[in-house]
Length: 395
Image (cartoon, rainbow, N blue to C red; front, side, top):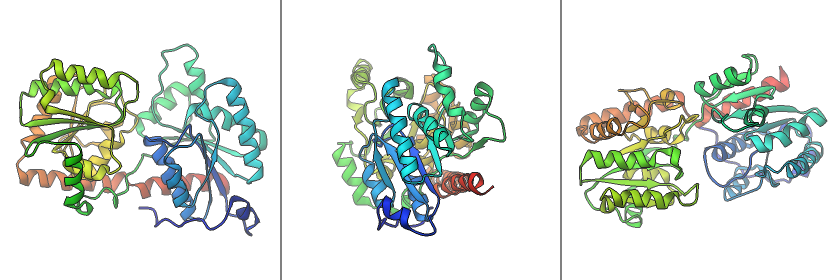
C-alpha cells in the first residue's frame, strides 16, 4: 500500500516559499461526504503528500476533510456540488485564482459539475487538465451527452475499468493516446481479515442486533433502487431459509426508498429476517459478519468497490454479471456472477455460497484475496496515477 501517512508541517503559502518547489495537483470533487469517488480522492491525496508533491483538494466539504488533513493534503471549500450555471461560473473564477496563487501544475476533475469549472480555469491559465470517468454515464435525458462530454476533454482521461474505458472511447471518442484504465484499489492493511479482532465483530453484531447463529447475507452500499435491494429481498424470499438473515448496510440515497424496502420486507413476511443499518465506520468488521456478500446492481457499475473489499476480506461474493464486476470477480474461482434482475439465479448463487464446506470456504477466501492483491490494491492505483501525472509533466 502507499507509505505511512505524514502530517503536513507547513501551510500552502509556506510550500510556495520552499525551493525547489515540488509539483502540485488539485483534485476537484463535489463533496467529501462518502462514496468511492470521495474515498479515492482522499487516498490519492495522501499518496501525493507522501511522495512529496503539493496535494490539494477543492470540494464543498464533508467528514472526509479530517482524513485529508491527517494525510498532509490541503482542502479548499467551494460549492462544487452545484449544477447551477451561474454558480459553476463563479466556481471557475475561484479555481482560477487558486491555480495561480498556489502554482498548481495539474487539475484533476473527478465529477462532471466541478469538471466544467475546472476545465475553464485550467484552460485560462495553461494548466494540465486530467479527468476520471467513474461510470458509463446516462444518456437518456436531453443535453446529457453534452453535459457528460466534459469528462472526455482531459489531456489524459482515466477510466476505472475496461468497461468504462470502452464506453468513453465508443460514446465520446476518447482516443487511445489519452485514455488510461486505472482500476480502483483497496488498502490491504485495512481490509485484512487477520487484523480484525473478535471484539470489533461482536460489538457490531450487538449494535445491529443480529440474531445468534444466523447466517448473514449482506448487501453493502447506498440505499438506491439500482443497487438491487428489491431483488435481494425477493432472492432471500425465494431461498426460503429462516436461518438466513438479510442485512442492508448503507445510507439512504433517495428519500423514501428505505421505506419502500421495509414495506417489501413486510409484504414478503420477512420482517424477522432483515435489518437495514445506516452504514458503518468499520467496514472490515462488517464484512467479517457476513457469510456471503451480495452486489445485486440492476445497472452496470463502473467498478464496484464493495466487491473488491469483500474479496480482500475473504468473503464469498455474489454479483450481477455486468459492468466492472466482470473484471473484479473471476467467476467460479473468487466468486459468483449471475444475470441482472434474475432473482432465482441470485437465490441459487447465495444458497451455493452458504452451502460451501468450511475447507472450500477457506480455499475460496485465499483465492479471492490473492486475486485482489495481484490486481486491485490501493498502492497500484496510486502509483499508476502518479506515473500518469509524471508523463504529463516530464514527458
